[in-house]
Amino acid sequence: MKVHIIGIGLIGGSFALAMRAAFPETEIYGSDASEENLQKAKELKLIDQFSTTKELQDADVVFIAVPVNVATKVVSETLDKVGDQSLVLDAGSTKSGLCKAIANHKNRRNFLAAHPIAGTEFSGPQAAIPDLYRNKTNIICEVEKTAFRLQERALNIFQNLGMRIRYMDPVSHDRHIAYVSHLSHISSFMLGKTVLDKERNERDIFDLAGSGFESTVRLAKSSPAMWSPIFEENKENVLETLNEYINNLTHFKELIENEDFQEVYNEMQRTNHIKSILNGIN
Amino acid sequence: MKVHIIGIGLIGGSFALAMRAAFPETEIYGSDASEENLQKAKELKLIDQFSTTKELQDADVVFIAVPVNVATKVVSETLDKVGDQSLVLDAGSTKSGLCKAIANHKNRRNFLAAHPIAGTEFSGPQAAIPDLYRNKTNIICEVEKTAFRLQERALNIFQNLGMRIRYMDPVSHDRHIAYVSHLSHISSFMLGKTVLDKERNERDIFDLAGSGFESTVRLAKSSPAMWSPIFEENKENVLETLNEYINNLTHFKELIENEDFQEVYNEMQRTNHIKSILNGIN
Image 1 (tube, rainbow over the protein chains, first blue to last red):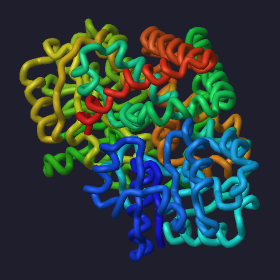
Image 2: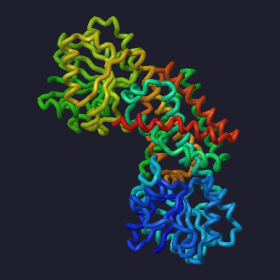
Image 3: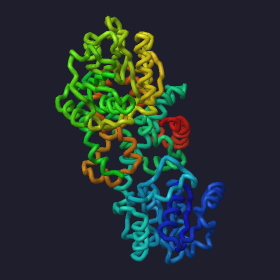
């Protein structure tokens, strides 16, 4: 199987490693906007060779893992170049704009819009890990717009990578994912900022912070180059979640100001059953 | 060594397990406001027997791990009862109010105010783990107010449990800990609330949420009975952190509203170096 990966960082690189493990005969071609990342990916043996336009014609799979603000352009140009038998997949965290933009592309049926819910707070080819996708959810949007035989190829790949599949329309995807992913990143970045602004003497943070802080602020290590475009693409939904989050925090603050600690307790108690839901994750 | 533990949940129970491992000859006496917890602690062999007032006289160590709103009363009453040779420790997350309240107690020199930065999101005696304190920081306040020989006994215990010691005045402790611990809990609880309010169909959360959400919302599993009193005790500092956090979130929201994504990027970039600080934790 000839696999091209466009954007060979954490997401693309981990896909390369997983594909090699699941399909040992796979030849992997890579390209990246950064010459340095591309060289590193070759050194790390994530890819066998550099991808060229000519070879895209013969690709069995093209996996696109680029920041969401360039995804539409890259997907569209890739669809221009691939052959009839090529499956083009993306992995972006927003789906509405992309699906809309390529809706009328003549090769739309070669494309499958996907969002594997997988990642770490690290980035770049050196962050790639072979098991990133195992036991994770992959959200597929507008599956009916993909050619049957390419749907089948994609599902076979996802199954062999150990992923769960969920189908969803792109608008619902973007709305839900704003809550369970995009908002978490903002809450974490702003928590990090609040503490850093206060604690100029960083040694103090280090010494007093426990695993709870570490866990809550972990996502503030994420790549701004990846996340700024996501907030731009999913602006309306992100603003909605952020408004609700700020309102909830403000309400909680007022309860403390008014010394209504019974209701402070109740607020936490009502949220506490998130335990049973979270136990299902991972 | 005769050790009494008042409040035999996660914190007290883990102390029991750690003491048994470090000092095999230890006899452990326990008491708890909940008869059920106390029975469970006995069944789980966290404690050897129930603690009574009479035996407190002979205690070598009394470890008090109760919600901070009752800590002052419990510490004060314990100091009334213990013998000359007894060391009384607490483990609460707020220190100013307590230290002030017992400043003039006739047995003040038997007391050492401590805050081990250790915990999990679980609670109760069944949540106790033997290594909870290993490699964690223990903040000691007003060490000079404790009798020399009891300071020495306490340090010997903390060293044998594998803890790092930091000395701090109670006012600074409460201010710093509001940032690196108390605020994280509120941000996490309110994140959980925001998502739960939106996602009535809990199955959706389960399916779409990844490890990032899980990490950020983990502290929302914490015990409201423990945390509501902490927010009450540390009200002023908590309100300050919460105000700053809400301001930072509001500013970030406005940047998105104004489509200033360069500055959205910059905001995240400036916080990103938290990586290097967090790498020091754990």
